[in-house]
Length: 93
Image (cartoon, rainbow, N blue to C red; front, side):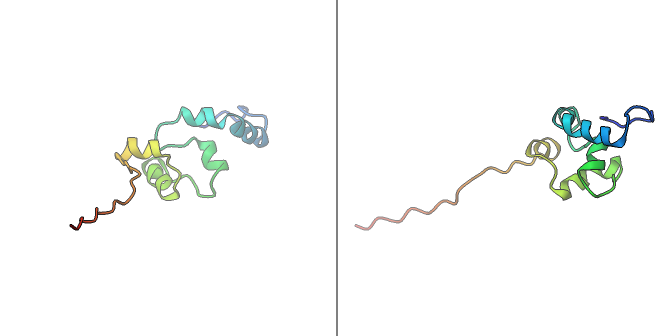
């Protein structure tokens, strides 16, 4: 399920494949390299076709599907949460 299967009997049916994907989704995604998604993710969680390995990470980024951890690992993106600072007022007197 993680990388697909050429064995037509790997699952009893497409319904079983879908059910098992959602049942084990969290664990399977944990095993997936940053910027990648298993075939079942592309089959069941987006209407877009799989863009191919070379374009997968960029497609996920455009879809907003990369986690913050993936963004940091892949692109070094860190977005610190900061509040705007006010300049202190000069004291009179």
